[in-house]
Length: 133
Image (cartoon, rainbow, N blue to C red):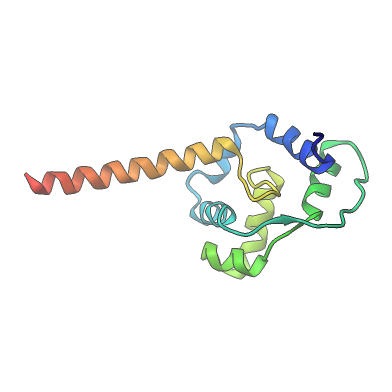
């Protein structure tokens, strides 16, 4: 069964991810909170999609994003980022292809965030384990 053009084009971006995108998120708590909130926000494709205006990466990326629905208010609420700061941060994440229009995130960023969480949990377990002795 053939995938839709939307999915095929999105997968093309996912197949060509850049690890450097991690540098955008590393050390920036607001961006990190938006990334985490994105993975917990309902995102869906629009039923009636627009036609893609070009074949270059920039036009295709723009087309993918204009054909999704999500609640900006829900995302702001879940991220804990102020509304005033949200738009510029969100645009930076989209423009640098950290966030994907299917509700997922760049795989390198996902691995980075998981490693940070594991490090925090290990440090916490180490501190609580030393108190028991």
